Figure 1 (cartoon, rainbow, N blue to C red):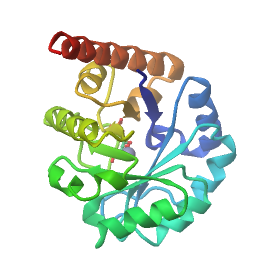
Figure 2 (figure 1 turned 180 degrees about the vertical axis):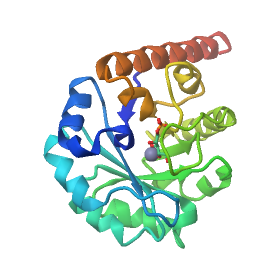
Figure 3 (figure 1 turned 60 degrees about the horizontal axis):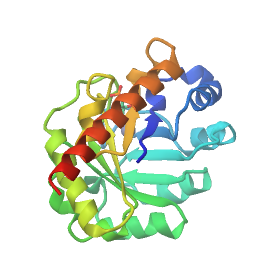
Figure 4 (figure 1 turned 30 degrees about the vertical axis):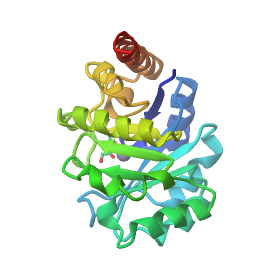
Length: 232
Ligand code: DX5
Ligand code: ZN
């Protein structure tokens, strides 16, 4: 049983991005979460493949690219080339979800589908067996530092059940407003990968923040396993 912590660079110091990547990895990050926003699918505008390529030499852990862009397909080869290990996209941003998933996989990159707070689970119906990761948004995408939306918790539980039923090793990642206060509940609901932007970068004590998130998440998961085995 393990939990992955993925600091989101959205809350890092963009003038010192390479050093920030090194610092969070040194502090225990398992992944680097890289938020790509286009001022079209979401109101904000961030970074593209050039910046991904620039941080790649610093990233000794996988780069987890979260595409909040529409359309999405043209950027996939560019991010694969720039060193992405995982590419996730929003179904609303693709005309042909299955094609986009296959495009990601054809580049040897892990494929993820992202569910917004109001996106129904039915988008997973015919594509789950092609996915390496499901990303549940616990805020509406576009900005760091927003408040966690509680309705994400039953949704995480429902996706966890679907993943267990599939029998495949699909990661379940949660993104938005994750912090030390809710990490246990997020993990208890079934998440194994926690994105955290402001909770890691605010205050500057990266190792302490990552350790706390991991400890709370592991405690949350242990609780669920104990509960499940008592009902077995
Ligand atoms: C929001 C981004 C998140 C964001 C998380 O659209 O996808 O990755 O950076 O930031 P916090 O953890 O501060 O909510
Ligand atoms: Zn994100």
